[in-house]
Length: 614
Image (cartoon, rainbow, N blue to C red; front, side, top):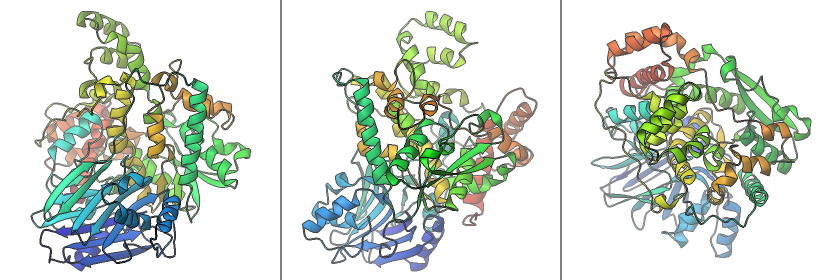
């Protein structure tokens, strides 16, 4: 795991300024405190700070081929590097290390156009081909590792984080008003946007090529689903569950490859418990697990449930920490590492558990991704139940909505949403439609959130699969994963996500929707797969969604928020929201959190940058 940075110039004779590269690397040293390395040559400058996980002795980067013509810097892990290394050695390649990253340059030597298909892992890397004078920027298939870039008149500047690019001093940061509109509408901002207009995020499953001043991007992978009538109905639910267990166990085995201690984030739910139980089976030694609770009982699941670390047969060494109201003081640090404003306190809670875990291990496995792949969110059940009513005449739906408004308000909104699974219906299903921007709040201009771009064959997919696609492409990549990578790397902790191994993802896409959601029970196939591996009470346990006491964490900032005016928001509108919130007329916690974190972001990234938050 590392932080990477670099500059490539249109002028093939120009060399990168060493102090600039050093500054870009240093600002993300939290991603890799163990060592630093640089490569500078006409037209290119690369820098990296390394968190040593695999081959701690000889795996420092940059790493090059035997003749030095291909150089790579990589943030992430190549989990199938052992098998790839053996294949490459058999073909005559010579290795100078036992690093997983070194396989990248040798694979590229053999097949510059198709080498990405052979990589299995989480990664964001930059590869410089000196002979072709070509720079490749590549992001893993699911977007687990971040990669930012900006195209300038001189060339291209890139790095793991937004702050890496800004630290180059090669762009003048300006606000992107469209990003803040997406944050209010969706709860997150979709790539390629960032809070800075000229800085972009490379999309998951994409590669960028920079050559002779020309920049092109291309998708090399995308998740796809069978047509609605092409699922394999000859396989029973029990057989699907058995296959899922085998695939997940294989992914966990690969994710355990490490030369340093590995632990796990553990909640009361089945996802992290499944990963941890499979770890326990494979390691057969005590495992450190890390759990976060909350002093607010409405969002706490630890006190109400028995967790896996309380079952002695799993040999888990459980560590607990509690998120309390006073942790709202961590907002500036959370914004510094999240690099955008946000509407929930999840980033703070993830930083707390990361800090706890980093005291014991360098790597943790987590359960993220299972809900998107296996239909674990409430909106899958809601869509399954309410979809047959979507084609009814509007007066009928309106009448039904009035009848449901008291008992199931979300269903009432869904009934009045468009029948087509577009952006508006997705927002309604996921609950973001009720978080629209309050009128006259924004003082910045920007485009409205753009409609989803449909992939080939989308209309032939089962409705359940269509919903999964948007979850995987947008919520997972732009909301869920950043809550894992950025807070963990703030404490030099590598978080691995076995459910997001692309081989497992491709397998999960073939499981029929009616197997994933059986008897309107979410993730039933996973529950069946883990019978005999997890305690029955955990297999049966209903999903308790990840949340945080946003209102509690925000309470100490309301007065300061009311006095701040940085040009993003209408001050009178902000004060009105605060007054309504304080008087209990409405719960504006999410909107106020976005406002407050935007104020903090503006101060850190536009006014005081590069004043780092330790």
